[in-house]
Image (cartoon, rainbow, N blue to C red):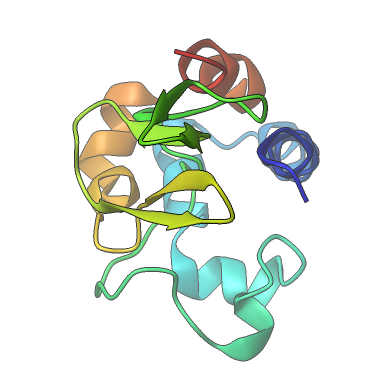
Length: 141
């Protein structure tokens, strides 16, 4: 699956949940709280494939899943740039994490970064229109 396909599919799932929460009258803080890992793994099992495995994407006690795709992550399936004859498909604007290179492509590895999964970061960057918010950040340079 390409980055763009994942992003579009995830945006639809995210919107469906947020629309449901807004219809219930939840405010920003309640929506953010709803997206805590424990609640999502219990009530929104199809949101993330790791939920069914009872696994977290990041080793942290209070993982929040609202910003599953980080505003600092940039991607382009056609490539952002080239490095040592490898096409760079993704990168981090705050240079947190590492890279994985294979098959002539370089991908950013976010597994050691917990920045977008803290409530304070989510609150600072919050928008109920996740797709719009993330599109402005993630697509391209």
